[in-house]
Structures are given as C-alpha cells and as structure tokens.
Amino acid sequence: MWRLLAPGLKFKRYLAGIAVGLIGLGMAIAMAIPPNHIRPIWEVLVAVVGIAMVLWAGVRLGQSITEVLGSDRWAGLLYSRRHLARGPRIVALGGGTGLPAVLRGLKHYTSNLTAIVTVADDGGSSGRLRGDLGMLPPGDLRNCLVALADTEPLMEQLFQHRFSSGELAGHSFGNLFLAAMEQVSGDFVTALRESSRVLAVRGTVLPATLDQVVLKARLSNGEVVQGESSIGHAPLPISEVWMEPSDATPLAESIDAILAADMIVLGPGSLYTSVLPNLLVSPIADAIRHSAAFKVYVANIMTQPGETDHFSLTDHVRAIEHHVGQGLIDLILVNGEEIPQEGLERYRKEGAEPVTKPPADHLGAAMVMAAPLLSVDTVIRHDPDKLARVLLRILMNMRPRWAEGRIGDALWLETRLRGKGPRNRDGVIRDRSRRN
Image (cartoon, rainbow, N blue to C red; front, top):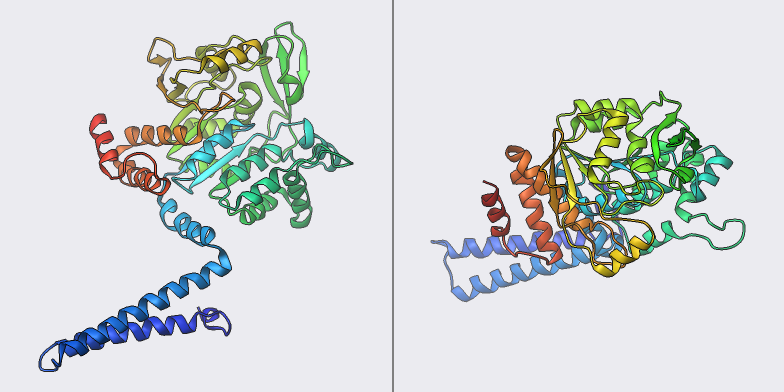
C-alpha cells in the first residue's frame, strides 16, 4: 500500500481530493442539522463543491490507472478476479481446434477453468520442436493459452503468427516463445505458468502428461500406424489406438482439478487424436470416473475423413467406451441446428457427414441432448458462446442447488456486458421456470 504513495504516481493528490470532497459533504450535513443550521445557500454551496471535488478526483484517479494499465486490462482484471472467480469449476479435455472453442466461450463466465491438453502431436512446428529440442509439443497448448487469454488482439496475433520463409518457415511465434520460456524457466510447466501471466490467461492450461508419448493405431487390416499426424490420415478404418509408454504419469494438478470439478467436458475434437489420447493416460480416466462432477461429451458436428468416416454418434461413444470403459459420460451433447446446404455439400465432397442425434434419448447410461451449437461461418464448427451457454444451463439443471445463483448471475451479467439477448434478469428466471 505504501507504494501507492510514492512520488510521481499521481495517486496522493487525487486521494486527497476525494478526502477533501468527503469532508465538504460532511460539513454541509453538519451545517444543516440544528442548532448549527445556517443559510441554506451556504449548505448547498458546500455540498456542491464537495460532490464536485469527489467526482473530479475520482475521474482523474481512474484516468491515472488507465494510463498505466489500459482501460481494458484493469477492468478485465477486476472482472476476472472478483466475478469470474465465483464461477463453476470446469475441466475441459481435448486438443486440436475443438478444445479452444470450449475455452473461448467459457472464459467469459468463469476463471475456474482447467484445460488438460493432449501431448501426442508429432506433426508440423510442434513435431519439429519436439524432435530438435526434446520438449513437449507446444502447438495445442499454445492454442489453449490464446483461447483463454484476456489481452489485446495484437498479442494474440503475435502468438499465432507463423513464419513463411527462411529457417523458421512453418514455426509459429507462440511455439518458439514456449520453447524459449522452457529453457529459461527450467521446466515446461513453469513455462506454461509464466506464459499464462504474459497473456493474462483466465484459467489454467496443463499437459496431459510430461512424458514423451507416442500414439499408435491398429487399422482394420491389422497394420499398425505410428504418430498422431499419420493416424489422422489413416487409409483404412481404425480398430484401436494406444499410447506408449502405457503407464504415462499425469500431473498431480490435473488429477486434483478433475476430482474438484463441478463439470468435466470431453471434446469436441478428433476422436482418436484429440479426445482419446488424454483418456489413455489411465489415472486421468480413473479420476474422471470417480469424480462427482457432471460429465459431458461434446460430439463433433461433422465426421472427420480418414479418422471417423461414416461414424454415427453411437460409433463415437462406443469407441470411447471400448478404449477406456464406461462411466466417463453422463450426457452427450450434439448439434441440433440445421447446417446450411452450401457448407454441407462442400464437406460431403471431402467425405464428411453430419453427426446427428439418434432417435433415442439415451445411449447406454448417458443421456443425449441436441442444442443449436453451429457457428455461422464458412467453416462448420461450434460457436464458442452458444456452446458455453448450453453447458452452463446443463450444469444449472443437473446441479441446481449449487449452480443457480452463481451461473444464473454470470449468464445475466455476461449478456449485459456483451449487449446480447435479454436485458434483465427475467431472461434467466424464465429459463429456470421452464426447467422446473
């Protein structure tokens, strides 16, 4: 606190101005109370001067803070530390482009987010850094950091910038930054923690394991394919996948986050190369199974050519249960919004098909729910905000005693801040009444 009173910060003068203004207001009140009552004009004049002094000093104090931190940053810090810290504890597992979509939406409602990211990537910039430096592949972790960042767009563009020529061609700046940070800090987890501070990340990003793992797959003809980049383009249907070493050790922080979570989200993402690699770390799957959290599997909107050709929703769920057993999914969330015909035709030419809700409301012990999740874009993908709001309303329904106050207020406040949807709390209250 004494640092705020150091010379040159322009804090003391404005704090003194606020104090003088409050003293003036106190004097005006005292002058108005008998037997000290004097002419009303003096009382009004002193009160007006006091109010003006408080307003002027308060505005100037705010401007002084803004000059140093920037209006977006200090307001965002206050919002994140105070309001979002009350949000639900959510753990999301995956990789690729699907997990960042979940994080990008949920970060507006809670800062108690933990992303557990697959580290089996062996292609592109991540694969090169993994081979050259012996580090964990940083690509998926970088994407999650950027998705959770509460920082200026320029910083996000910088971390995602990919060099197009020279010896650095193909590398992204964010990957190189994480590589340098690991060497400076001494270990990869510390590098992630320090990078999170640079990007003002809302939440925590953790690798599924610190072991150097290799993903392998057996195809329908018995052939074995090695490496995530090769499995994603398998020439034949995949029978099973596994990871070597099979006894990879997860971080203790990941297990703690899973056991303390209110909701666990699996997917969306490539079934065999993004979702399952996390679950193949056995302690992670066991922790999810024993966690009291509500567990949601977010299905892909479209099948993935070379990996899940002609897969139905049932096929996706059976593949997960075949590899890691049952008990990991309470509810399956699938897109129920109509896909534009133009985009549908383009994806069908590539061999992709929509993943739709089956006629039944259950797949085994898991409930099935369809909701509008589609992003209106040239690419068929999940809309982060739609997905986040649906996930939070699911948690409100399934954990009403804990969730209604905090999540209901979070949905209402975020709606007001973004200027979307209903402008009052009735929008949330009506939803609760429909549930009841």
